[in-house]
Length: 569
Ligand code: DGT
Ligand code: CA
Image 1 (tube, rainbow, N blue to C red):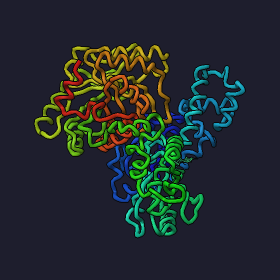
Image 2: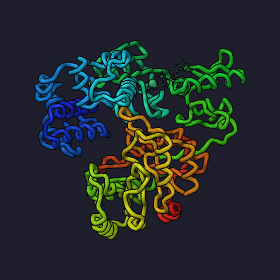
Image 3: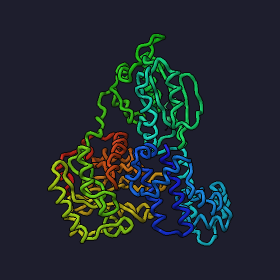
Image 4: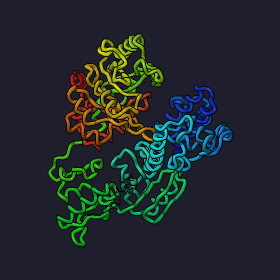
């Protein structure tokens, strides 16, 4: 699993080229490739083996060769050469989200700062103040960037964790002697970020399974290894723990190691009230084992409904389970379409037809192609003239493809004053309009909230996309008054989006739950820029499930006609 390492290498190349003021296209090409590799759902080594690297958006012959070179030798020669012409440590500074190439160079030249620790201490001592080109606000941004960077090192996004987990689960499944296998911990609860991966197996031959686990090719280091438990680290620095238990205890162990810790504590108290003792081996009355094989039998014994892992956070779910009134959580099967995707008309990699075919293949009955609006030049936003042509093309695709209807949409930009990037005249022609903020993230909370509310007020805006702007590891959510936005959305019948793009997951679980309580509808979109991104819906579904959403709370579970009625203002 070298996806993250290779993406990081390409990003570093892009940054160093930028300091050198190299060709902007080249700089951009490396950055794009880094992004594409980060977003992959497949192991890049496996892709290299199959010869499918060139299918990754932005990977041409040259980058394909570099990826192969890295897989084979652990290095890219051109990168090693490039690094030589820069001081050591400069790259570490560049990893801080708000430190661009110019700032890094300035810090180095003026203050001889060459690593994060040095920068932290310089900020603490007030040394950055008064340096030409560094404003007070920049210093604040750098400090919060350092915090983001550190947080990013401690936890990985859910998508990355799943990818790593699957590379362990797949080869273990079907081993002789293995009875059951599951992930546990925060991954099974599908938290948006994961510290380490927990795997649980039921087997009568634990040593054999554990040995196999520690010898998998992606294991780079064995941190600890015993007869029933082992911890390893992958080349990407991801820690994976594997525990083996007997089949009789599998349910109890799964319950215990899935957590959360607070949930476990509450469950144990309930068991005690019933004269039972619960631990990772089973449920006991005195010394007698009474349950433990499955989670379901344990929940039943404790007098409650089965609680889905995503709900196990001790935030009210236990009481509902005791009453038998838990919400029936949405599943990926409930989705009937995707309402936020891009085609090659703006900054996507695929044509409308390719996107529509891919959606049909997923069993969707509709897909909205919501390319960027005219003002968003970096994303190749569409002029009004382009829109006419795009609409014609959609008609053509719809005539040819019956299974999946293409909706004529846009992701219209909300400008710094809350104005939309197309006139109402233009907006009213779309089947569906989503509005989003793409700049001015650092405005005050009041101003940002007002911008979104103003967009909600527009008669033609159906959905607010990625409402808080969070980009994991790069940008915190911008400050908005979420309660005000929920109220505005409800008044104007505007839906709020859960953006499934793995680094966004915005809205988050808490937002979902709040919106639902207030009767605001949600949509789960992928913001796909290529056909293969459509599969990311599973991460939006994970967020929605953690936010207690049912299919009824999510508009794109509706059949097309009902959907179009429901979004009308
Ligand atoms: P993470 O790894 O920080 O993303 O989150 P988790 O929830 O996977 O935490 P982890 O890996 O430390 O432990 C896995 C599960 O094991 C946890 O969710 C609940 C259970 N567990 C761990 N330590 C304790 C404990 O001290 N008491 C109880 N009751 N359960 C624990
Ligand atoms: Ca864990």
